[in-house]
Image (cartoon, rainbow, N blue to C red):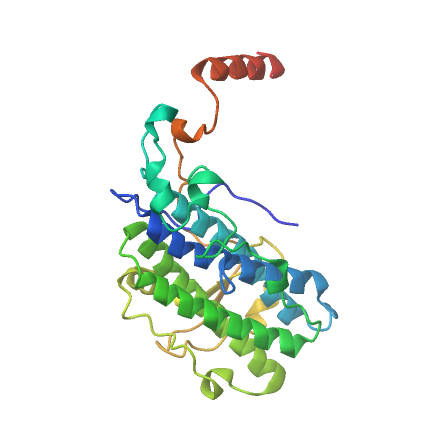
Length: 299
């Protein structure tokens, strides 16, 4: 089962100006073939379907722990998209066409389907599909797939970073480049233990060096490129049998941690959007709902 915390993985800065077309590009990092929904669901189903958990516990713990982190990454990217869309339109009577700007933007779906919030789509508006899940049941094959999935995800993050200078998008992407690099290395180390082959030398793609990306620097200064978390208070402790040694680019010691990282950020509060009829609760409705809640609580 999963334990949910009402916080984001990191605090996101609020941009002064909306970037709806940039938000469309960031959708690829959510619902694209190599997006966070794909990494989450690949690892989640592999962990559900894992055979021989007791015999191969360290490998199961790696996949399960990264699954939990990916839940938070899905949430982080979705909230980034929401913040990038914020302020694109203004309230107005229907006959003033308050959503007119939406028809000329890359993803009209943001304005028709979701009241200017994230969707489980890629950057071209194609819905995420369960056929993106790879769960073969063969440990080596699944680990190799996961390594390449993380390499593809890292490449896409680099490209989206170069597509928009929106500070919300770049803060999110910089953090995920660092954490995604951890996942690349975790699967490479798991493969090395399982097969004896150093995958990072055999296929060194992509480079794990993040120096070219400004928003990665503070996370690497904190050592986040060397830390793998269980995202559980007591379980999945055997990640330490695989996540050990030194980091290939900075030479620092790899560290396995129980629980969650010691940082987080608030969940953004999205205001009413009258031109989208969202959330569709008038001040009068709110007062009535508040009164019902009071009665329900016996107040």
